Image (cartoon, rainbow, N blue to C red):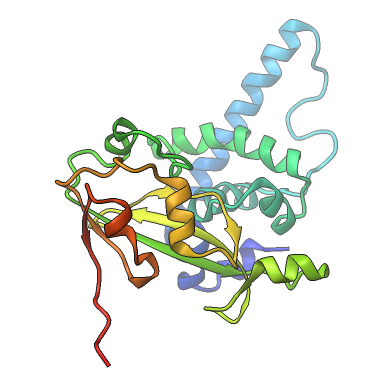
Length: 242
């Protein structure tokens, strides 16, 4: 189970998991806790008026996310790392549905405190309009495949599917699209580590999606894109001749 106390000992770890330094996180905790308490009393008063609420905020069974600090770290971790709810629940010792409910409950609180709408990378782009909604007025898109290691599956077939020859390990793979400012606007659903980067790319993006005026920056894992997407402007390194 991941713990905020361990992360708070290292600024590097805090930035990797929550997107803030330890100092910034600690400054945010107080206002987050105050807003969370305020919302709890509002829900209590509404429940009393409806006649379906007896317990005051803070009474009843204590969940796994006990403190304001743990709750803030949980919701920031979700938006920084964007795991599935199954993975999020595993990391914070919650079941999948409880992880989902906590994200739904805590996100509005975080948005109020930050005065900012929390936006996740898109999971699907199927039209030119959707592309420009995510990347307005963009001229360059940087596309890459990323892999993260997973525990070696017990089932032999799953071992074969998730084994990445590139990483020499069992992994899950995503396609990521970012702009020149390194802002990630698109994150694909995860695939088995055996899947090839370009194979995923072709399944995700229809031909004709990328206009000539946008330059796609890709590595050699996407060899073939110039042939299959002739309407796109592509930049990638060239293999040295033997």
